[in-house]
Amino acid sequence: MFFLLSGEGVTDIGASESATTICEGDDFYVGPMAIVVAKIVEAQHDYSILDGACGFFSESNVVSRAGELKAARKQLRLPGKKQAKETRYFFNNARILARFAKEKATALEDEVVAVLFRDSDGTASAGRGDWDEKRESMLDGFGEEGFDKGVPMIPKPKSEAWLICAWKTQPYQGCKALEERSGNDKSPNNLKDELEELLDEEVTPELLREKVSQSFDIDRIKMSSFTAFRKRLEEVIA
Amino acid sequence: MLTTTSGEIEIFCAKSSPPKGWKDLKSPITFSYEGSILSSLKEDLLPPSILECKKRIAEIKSLDLLAPEQLRQRTRESSGTLGLGGQNLASFLHEMSDSKRFDLISLLMKAYPRFTGLHAKSLRSGWKQLEISESYEGQESGFFPAMTTEARHVNDGMLRMIAILAELQSENRFLLFDEIENGINPELVEFVIETLVETKKQVLVTTHSPMILNYLEDDVARDGVIYLYKTPQGLTQSIPFFSIPSLRKKLEVMGPGEAFVDTNLSELADEIDDIKTKGA
Image (cartoon, rainbow over all chains, first blue to last red; front, side):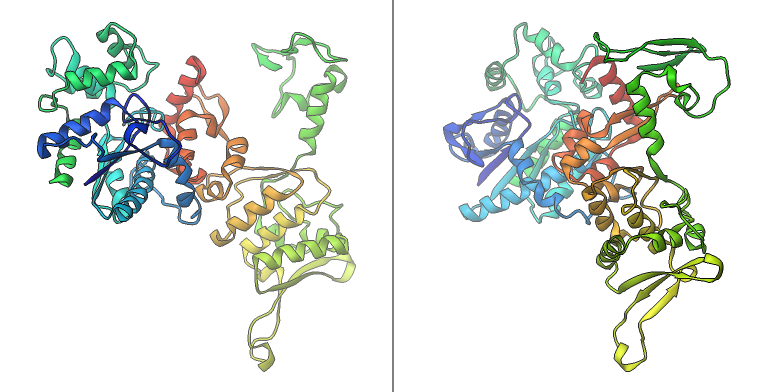
């Protein structure tokens, strides 16, 4: 089983250090959220996906392939009773990743699990839309491409909430409130600043990797967005 | 910069070095005005660049009231332009040069495969009547002859299409089409948009239609789509739609129309407010 991971940047899933479409091995700079994925898989299967069983697919690669979907200008999907607003971004990202995942599965002649990380309240939403509809839309996007091993990884409102939960003064306690916070980095008391204050040093990707490796207990994070992600991941790797 | 506040009008140059001929103006508004204050001010009070702007705005040919009933009317003369509601269409087409009429017919044939021509038929006393010709299969057998239809029996959408394309053949340099999607068959939206994007004239279109937007190329949408909205205070504001960070992000993975229709516009004001107060 191969894991294809896609995120928004170096502080979540990671970054590509090569120009290849799907970056693997040492070319994949593993980000903190990729380590979280690895921990969950390891808990169930007793091996690390980071030992050659995963690849990274950058957001810019998603964008470069979006033209395939955009070309069908007549196929305008309208929001309505069955499709909420502020969900299309998640749907289309899932469709594109699913296409790559299916191609990778054919090339490897193996099963491929695709994990798609997007903040629930990131740039594309700016605080609008419901988390569960976005998640559902991502699942629909995987389904639209006939891909059944897609996993939405959508922290509510963003990954800092999961990290703060693990590292706050009273770790893993009362974390639900974090999910109700704004994802806007310009808002007062935003999650990014709070994380920096908590760590008491500049937040770098390297620091986050280190901290997640050492002290991020997947069994103690009780947040609905994390639980939904974990449950779905465990379902597809079962 | 032109402002009208507290009963005063002020024109001043926002740059440190004003262009040649510039003069600031500050004066109380001592009259009741409607529409643009520019239309009421004496021209010799206006700096040259503002005067030029006023002239350009006055030259905009607005077809914001295209009405099928008016497009169908028999008319006498057009003075080289369509009326606000398109009422001079027949005489406008009659006065058009052969080469321009040929270009117009070629465009219409692309849009309507059965279309073969249009004629502005001269009637008594100088009245002109628009007719269109179409050709259907089976013509040889005599059951379905080439059909000529008087304007009063032509469908609304086709008349609007003729008016829009005819205006592109006019001498006007800047055209405004209000809610261009009205009456246009969705099948023809792509054709209309491509024709408008490719024309050498400046074109301003207002629309609520995601389909119209979806047929714009991303770069055209990024540069050309302006979002008009009202603030809670009732002020009308504008912003390049795809300069809004969330819309710019959405445009990366979906068409401009999809991004528009997927966005909760009533909540978009918060993000715009955020950009304007805190910076993007």
